[in-house]
Image: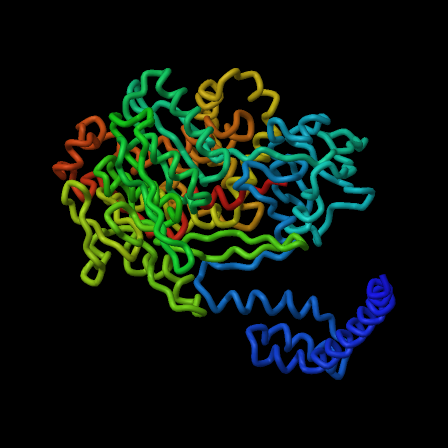
Length: 572
């Protein structure tokens, strides 16, 4: 009993003494902490600690960190990137199939936000905002004038889900303004904007990126086309810069037989992982053509590479971008994120199609497409040098090359018919897109009488849209050039009709009109009709490597006509 009493007396004293000694030792080690860190792994943290404690002026260390991280990441590969909290909030996550905003497509005309389209299912449609409305006030602040730019519109109208924004708009010729309160919500983003029949047996599917909703959209498109009698598919991945690898894998699985390899990945901290088709695909025996160009990258190249290496689909177009690196996104507590390259992917034959780069040196990498253009790659297959590229073989033994993108089986150049300096001026300035909106507003009542885009297209073909555009552009400072206008007239008329149809009827009609005379689609149809895209014909190499329907009458293009259009689409 006495022994127990001694323990009760001394135990608290021992604990108190131990705590005191611990505090003393901790303080001693804290003195040497910066030195320990300086020679340890976290030198950067120590640098910021010294600045915070000892620098001559007061500084915001958090701002220093934000400025330093991009510089550190820039020393890695070209696709690792730091995304600030502000940029994450601004862009949202469109690969998830939505972003948070008010759900309108707009252009800035006469220093005013003009609403071109109201997205179906979006919050603006829910409150009654319509195409043609012009924003005058946002949150009781004037929202017009020379200081108005695209970034300001994005930062003001996009925002966190369920937050509210007050909008006052001017509608038509009415002098009165109309007030709306829009609750920001998830605005749907379609990644398969068009799927339609090119003839009674051939279907076309446009895929703009690979997001979380892409596979479901793709399967829906396939089901629709098959219900219309589709037996052959053209999958358009031109200018598709990629996205989620999983979406590309699921799409690829629809066309391959059980056991065919789709892709494998491998990295320093990530052991090799093989992905095979499971045989559940719905299109294993249909003719397939995949369209690619210099803007097709990453997940697009996984799809195209798997089709090529398994001799399953015919790749038509031009050499792809050449991105064989896999990124993972690591999100920080403040909402910022690090998109870090963690592995390389390889096509079934073993190719890594990543083009060359030097760590920390992005200039040459960023100039690659311009260099390709200057070498003539957009117009001639012969300008592509294969001598130094590693050689691989498809399952049937056809030669394919690694390290520098996916080389198409059939080369089709950029179509330059109708392209001249006048066309480039009105395209670069956004004048066609702007005028199509002006015309739509003037003619909306007449156009709304047509029940289908086909009926509207027939009407528009009788209208002198090019003449109207020329006068509008002249008033904006682009001088008339009769010879060049005549040379571009057919192309301008077709694209103007497509833009107007999109303003009224949406994407489906737009693509069908815009691509009515598209060279790469015409070549793909010729290959399908001559059965050159069957599995047997591909294995035996019965196709021609260069299209015999090439036409080049004008200067080459760094941007395609579709790119000129797509980069002008602004959505909040």
